[in-house]
Image 1 (tube, rainbow, N blue to C red):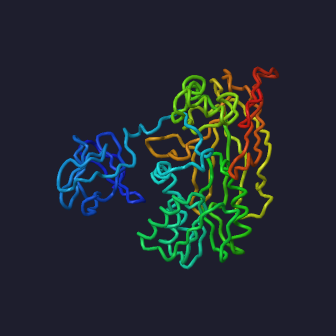
Image 2 (tube, rainbow, N blue to C red):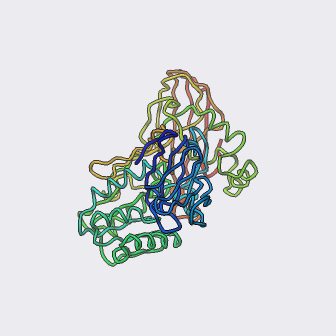
Image 3 (cartoon, rainbow, N blue to C red):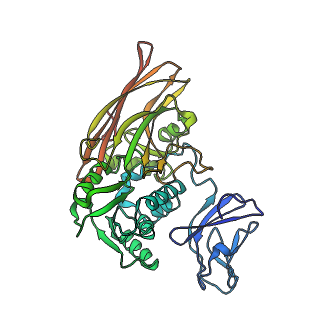
Length: 433
């Protein structure tokens, strides 16, 4: 079952990773899908929307959905709680979060669980992998994480799947989960950076989701270009096959106020945020980009294409990791310009596209794990319809030996008629204004 339930009609939906999503009384909980007592499938259990408890259908052990505590029946062990909170209160529009792509090497179990619960991501990739993988294919899952893409490839009939990941702990989780699913002999884990690894054979298809919310903020173009050249058979398939990234100027005054005042949601408060910026060598909060859901209603102009990446095409079609792109916007409505919204649209397979630009949190057109990229300007500018915003957006690949690092720059000016009313210049390598 899926979708919202009223207080009288809770909904239960099994998720990958042996998890269960429960929606009841306006709240959402993600818990273990099996009872700790005798592994009864809780999707067939009973949810009391008044007490927010779930009971196992086998022996009627009962658990608190918020804490996982056993509150009745023969089971004394708690039920695993992956995430809980008022739905859709897990995050809201214009809440500012630190950029997940800049913390790639520190992703722990909680962030992987967030990705597994990302409906937009999961639905698109499952459909695309099922469509693209043919029985007997040999597959590379590059950046396999907990192994969910590998599992879908194996379920689609892949003869073998090689799973590469830098994080040995999460790779062990992938191996364990795929072994439990009966695929131990067909999944081959490989720990390390893909540039440093070799495969014993070339593969029919490379699948990967190592895109950041600005597409290349996890260095995916260089990584997938290398994978195509060294791992893919001639005529093989890359998934995704095409990725476009976009920028649009926005009015996001609430988001801007968080940077000028308190701190991002996960920065550990103002002091923690200041320490983080100092460690990065950032002069101020505007020398960084952020993960933020930025509503379409805040768009001040039409989005502009930054880059087009075609992973299946040899170097030359957007493969350069360093670039500078001039962009021009005509303001379409009055508002306060506070920065830019970045996002990508990826053509995963022949019939499946993944578009993370949406802003409907309740309707699940947003991505929990990607959100949008927010590139703020230090000084908000009041603009009117017909004003122009000129932007030069740049990326320099590589940073301090980090294979996933880069420096982004966004600088330009706001013009009213022929008069320059404001200038801005920012860089994740430090503010240049």
